[in-house]
Amino acid sequence: MIENFEFNHWFWFVLSLALFAFEMMVPGVIFMWLAFAGIVVGGVVLMIPDLGWEIQFIIFSVLGIISVYSGRTYLRKNPIVSQDEKLNDRGARYIGHRYNLERALVNGEGKVRIGDSLWLVRGDFDADVGTSVRVVSADGVVLIVEQV
Image (cartoon, rainbow, N blue to C red; front, side):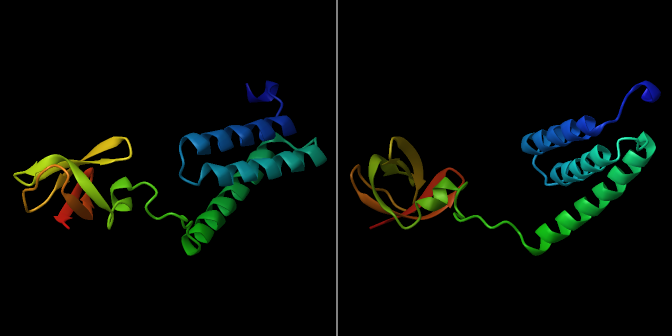
């Protein structure tokens, strides 16, 4: 089957696009480096069209190993830092803010309205509706509050 299939530059460019797409679906920063190796092999095959498929795969394998190792080493030394550390931790964003109770704090549990959502709050006290509370920490989707 391989004898009938032509491994030209388009094969490597399409493979690289597929690897980039796979990186988007399954993030892990490994397929991107293989895609770069595929682009280089596609460029080499574009310049030397008579290169056998065996040599193409050897070049791809060597470049793939080198690019994955180099990329992982680079990212280990230079990790990607988010500009917003609390991006995926909504509860932590509310720490230090004051809110009024929407539902009374009874047996240490109540609710506050933040935006258009009601958040479950817990505290070591009981309080009536409208009492001002300050968020001191977050436990998952539960906000821990103290009376102001």
